[in-house]
Length: 87
Image 1 (cartoon, rainbow, N blue to C red):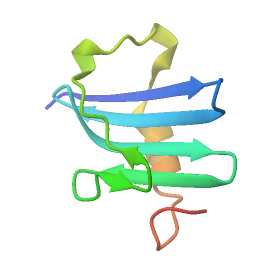
Image 2: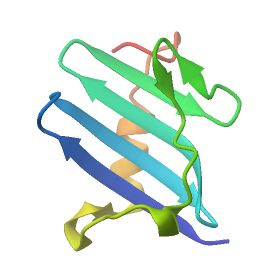
Image 3: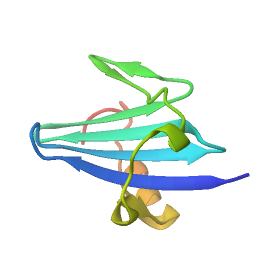
Image 4: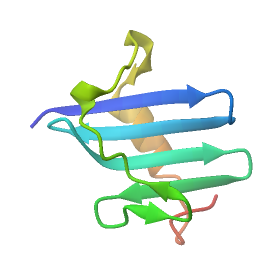
């Protein structure tokens, strides 16, 4: 299985995205807003107006510095509270 981890900042909206792809399909996603953090997964693909990425990794345009290691992704993912959506 091929696991790829992405971190992308959307400066215009002040949002950071972390996405975990397995075999080119997004299986987990974190969206960090100024006052909220949203956690999405295959079992929870929607929250408010957020949706788990439904595009293949190969169709998206990421730069070399957007790729992160699993430890960085898991550190953010594992910091969620019991409600799964807010710090």
